[in-house]
Amino acid sequence: MEPTGDPAEPTIRQRKTQHSDNEDVKEHNGGVSTDPTEEWKRHMEGIKGELLDQMNNHLRILLDKAVNIAVESYAQEHKTKTLGTAKRSNGPVNEKKKVFLHRASLLDELMEVGHFQTIYHMFIAVLCVFVISTAAVDIIDHGSMVLDFDLLFYTFGQFGTVVWSWLFLFLYTLLVPYKVSTFWASLYPKSKHKILLSLCVGTFLLVCQTFALYIFPVYVVNHYRLPPASSSIVILEQVRFIMKSYSFLRETVPAVLKDESKEKNPQIPKLSSYLYFLFCPTLIYRENYPRTPYIRWKYVAKSFAQFLGCVFFVYFILVTLCIPVFKNMSKEPFSKKTLVLSIFHATLPGTFVLLIVFYAFLHCWLNAFAEMLRFADRMFYKDWWNSTSFSNYYRTWNVVVHDWLYYYIYQDLLWLLRKRFRGGVMLGVFFMSAFVHEYIMTLSLGFFYPVMFCLFAFFGVVFHFTLNDKRTGPGWNVMIWTFLFVGQGIQLCLYCQEWYAQIHCPLTEKTFWGLITPRSWSCRL
Image 1 (tube, rainbow, N blue to C red):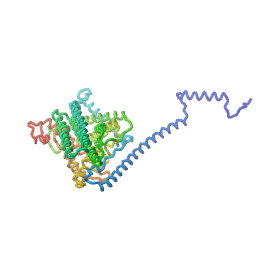
Image 2 (spheres, helix red, strand yellow; image 1 turned 180 degrees about the horizontal axis):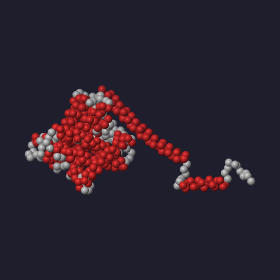
Image 3 (tube, one colour; image 1 turned 60 degrees about the horizontal axis):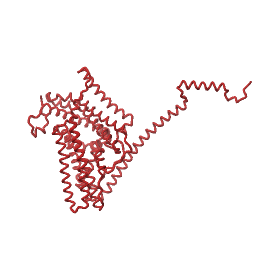
């Protein structure tokens, strides 16, 4: 008999057969249905997520740039309007001030691009090559791998002295400038002898600053004969605390004078704000800064790990490329050819050191502290590698120090000189920066050899005024990099020569001219 149901409806036996076939397919695929439509849908959802992430990143970068341009243009317009009506009696408070924004470091944004990550991976590969080459030489010479870090331990020697001297500098900078300024701010509005009070308090603070922040660190470095890295830590912290305390006083004192002129009670800054300022990665004091909502501890650990890796990177560069070349140079006859060849030999390791120090300190170290303190403005540098002029390079290489020099030295000197002699003021700022750089190098290395001062104060000034912002195009960028290569080669070569000349030819009698004359000029064994 024919079935009486709908011909399109499968029979019971057909349904059972189809069900058993489906079960077999599921068992064959691990119990998961393999519907091509579902797989294609999941694939497209993944592509959609990736596209949205890339669009969000690019949109955030564009919006950050738009905000920065808008803020800078507004500040410039505001400055133009106020300069015409500002009076000299109001002081430099009316000048343009730094605006802190919520923005990430440029390298963090570039690291989101896969092509730029490849450059980062190439530097890691170079470090691996240095480690492998050092291990291979040890195996050939000693029969086993012996990674000798004696030079690294020597460089960071006497670390206990560094710690207690840093604690002294920190406690002094935290307590004395704050207490003296708040004492003066509480008495100044009620005092009948405001000038006398200010002179007495200012003289007391100047004497304290001179002994605690100027003489004490120099005494520690010379008395305990600290090695180079330990000396540089003490001297760099000395300079940082001097700049921090000056910024705090420079921002609070005019605010008190302004409140007093308006017959308001002076707003004394909080100690917690000043303590936060001493650790946050900026040299411009504010009561409040833009903050991030939370701390990314993985980012902090990664930044410190990268900083430690950079330290080992520089160590391997010195051990592999520098020490074998310059260690016995004083034992060879001097010739111009040898000097020129050694300078150009040092260009590659010198450039490596420049890039690694930049990445280690201005990116890893400052970003680690910014993340721990939830400090949102991470613009510690700009795209200095794209510079087509030295003036732009100086502005973008180290934004933290440049801001301090611009807002507290350059602007204040312009105000004192009634906006005249702008070129002379700029030249004075250059010489001041060159002097501080040479001061750090002299006390860190333990000898006076003004290579950096000459390159910075003379050649840097000439390049700044000749290779200015009017120079554009890729050719000028090539020229900037060429000068950087040669300059780093000159510094690394001459400082290494002088270091070993100081060891091979010590002074028999310490005289003034003997201390300031480079030993490498006359040391021949």
